[in-house]
Length: 299
Image (cartoon, rainbow, N blue to C red; front, top):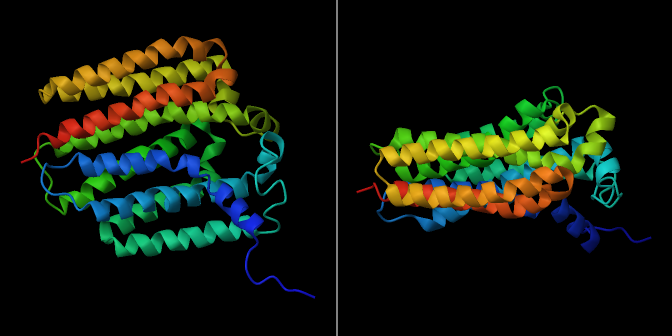
């Protein structure tokens, strides 16, 4: 009898799929924007890169593994091909990966300093609280999406900025914090769009996502408004800082989103993935413009 010592190639592929690499981009981008937004002096890019890896493959990967484990019954309806419901990660393998990735995240965070470690503890608390009982924030679409928006955008942006600041924040720090918070609020709408793919399973199992609570049409309308209004707030802040070029850039990107919204609203379930590819891309480009504008204020 042969005993398997190493995981099979199939299990390694299933483990990577469990971590959903496609979802790593938002927190990595936000962390990078945070680091970029602070000052025009030399930037320790290797440290920033390590932080982006922590934010994406590790912390976000952990959140995806945790979510897949506690949502395995929902995924059996919505996405039966996922690693856990399909049986490619049998038993408690999914849960063990989530625990291992949590520990690895804290190890790397500890190497990056106390600020990053504390932020990572908060991120992990939100990752587990979002999916796991007794909290399970995702059972309420309002609360769950707010937690995701904060964890995916605001927290990594502020952490990246804090790493660069090193305890010495510039005069425009309050504007930076406000902009990071606004982009996190806007991400609430992005998370609502992501909920459309799980609509049928959420209905059956009583997960009160916003598409379930409000219906697809009203949830899509809400998502559009929630994404647009914070960007207007960002433009107001940048205008007050006399960063006119950034205001014009973000306004143009927002107009592109507004032009794409009617197609989304015609059939939200069909076009939510399309809008995620088009509208959300314009949204995150606005984040970059805001970060570069803030950076120009530095010494």
